[in-house]
Length: 302
Image 1 (spheres, rainbow, N blue to C red):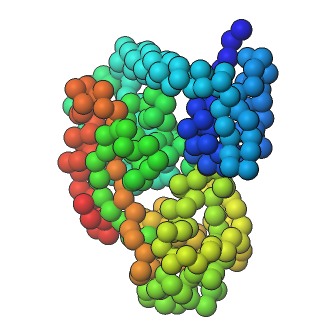
Image 2: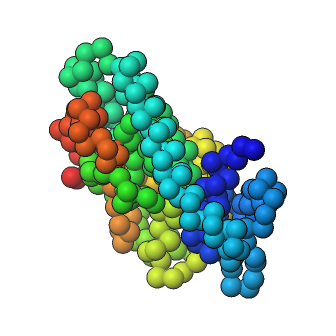
């Protein structure tokens, strides 16, 4: 009998969190989907792993036995996968770089150019991650290094370095009453409908809604989108506004949308991340040095 590692990871999350709700948030999946996966695992094993109560999910005796052994098993498997993929990349002289959204902005091509000068014969394979993958594939060993927003869930288990910090602005329909303001206090946006990322993106959604910087005021969701083009169209059509990095005014400029600076909300950090095991990997370290040695946009600060 073969059991998918995905099911085991779901089991570990529920066992550690104690509730389906918290486990689903941690895994960036819906609660019904997680429930289905746990039932599938129980069916494959032929045992009941949890008992459900008002307080949450409690491990049965078979569940306790599995919970004691599975984390180490998954850690070993992840290490094997990472080493195998890294070996394949080294053999092909390919550095896999994960990124989210616009990565390191317009500095990315210069970073790649400098890296290929340092490492003749090597190629950089840029892999864009979805918003629901906050480590851009690094935590799973799918990439060797990542350019992303900091901090992110699980960053404590990886190495990170801040490249630059840029303000969070707001994207508004150009006819919006606040669109003519030079700077908009974030407090004045609290009651506005926001265009949000899907709930399963977890941390990414919360970061761009600034949920921790509203003094407990709930967020009004005007629309949910999971693609940049849909995000832009939804804002332009007046269904909501959205926080965005200041660089979005350059990368996502389009008719119908105005970008304005916002006061009273913290900036967003862009960083480079890599696995602890690659502290001594000369190829990965060369790429990191190329990132850290670059000049950054005028609105960004290190």
